[in-house]
Image (cartoon, rainbow, N blue to C red; front, side, top):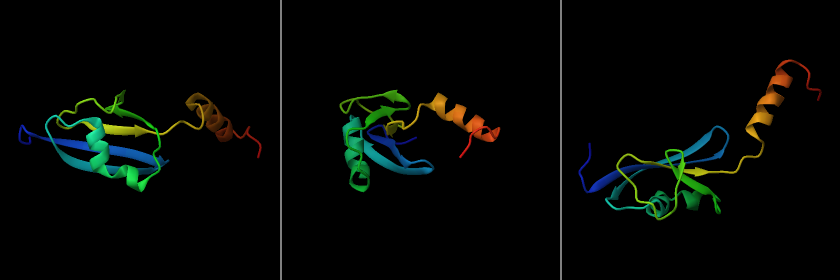
Length: 99
């Protein structure tokens, strides 16, 4: 485990299906979600706009403080409702979906 005054934080973003940009950071204790996003450089590599952000799957605000080993996640909007996508995959597998 790291020193008490340094946090180990991971920032992740998936710009496309099957692609993940993951950055491991060492931040000072008291760092916020906004600090992690800024230090990660992800915004400079991707057009992230106003994406939702969370920590371990729970929505967070930029001012939320981080803890050691937190995982900051950027969420891109869904293009298809997950239930609809599953239904379409099942139909395709069964040969009922015509092209």
